[in-house]
Image (cartoon, rainbow, N blue to C red; front, side, top):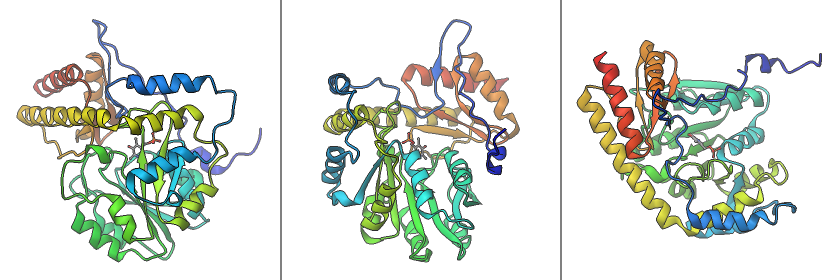
Amino acid sequence: MPRFRAILDTVPAYKAGKTAVSADGRSYKLSSNESPYGPLPSVVEAVSKAASEMHLYPDPAATELTNTIAEKYGVPPEHVAPGAGSVTLLQQLLETVGEPGAEVVYAWRSFEAYPLMADLSGVTSVRVPLLGETHHLEAMADAITPRTRMVFVCNPNNPTGTVVHAAELEAFLNRVPEDVLVVLDEAYREYVRDADVTDGLTVYRERPNVAVLRTFSKAYGLAGLRVGYLIADEPVASAVRKTTVPFAVNHLAQVAAIASLAAEDELLERVDAVVKERGRVREALISQGWTVPVTEANFVWLRLGERTMDFAGSCAVQGLAVRPFAGEGARITIGTPEANDAFLAAAEAFRNA
Ligand SMILES: *Cc1c(COP(=O)(O)O)cnc(C)c1O
């Protein structure tokens, strides 16, 4: 048998998320924070046209997409690094800073990909517990050592939906040494309605050690095509571009992302509808007696502790796939009003059981 890296023994084998189907055939996938809407007709049309070009390699630099993003935000194209989803960009960031002995600091619980990617890249994870479901930025700054090369700040945080506010973020960034890269993971930025949450794209303009990650997977509804981007100062963006696997962002993904930016108003209307539903779902849960942290993302978080897996099980019986974290809690994506109603009914039944 070939000899594998020892770290692989600690990496769990990939398990596909189960779909849940109720006895009467209903099935709602509220486990992956996807958009509940199908793709826009204009995006499908652009992708269909591009399909006739699939015998050709894509533009390796995703030039048109890069320029479109740069123009949208008023940043130089040199500051943009497109990637095959922002998870891939996380992996690339770890490749750019991950020397043996390097540490990466992040909150926990946060995005599941952080420990996985960190382990695979060989850097040491330093996890700082959440404080009241929110990043404890003071403790995160305290956790920085001379070995720290990168800090992830997931804002809003997956899976709790909580945000860090402008003043805390500013105070935190003032404490981070200049040679430590702070990655603001803003996968859910479009869902934020709290005016006191800083836009990472404002912060990065003042701080060469801040990088912003965005994705087309959530608000833009392109999870199946794998495309995201990083925006940071030239040295960071250029280091990340060096680690890109050749032709990482495929042609259909590039075309779909450009078409989605052209149809942004329509997509942001959908985001507004999800935000409305988010408010309705959270209020209904609270009136059922649940404690639900304020969420600025397209999901809600229930801290269920030891009851987490039971909760996920009783949701599954009702045809609802949710994302449980055993012993901690469950994350439930905001779906269509019908799916949300089904979830609220399941949550109420669980409380009354
Ligand atoms: C969903 C998500 C992403 C996006 O991943 P893609 O690879 O772009 O699909 C990134 N960060 C967080 C925190 C997420 O929840």
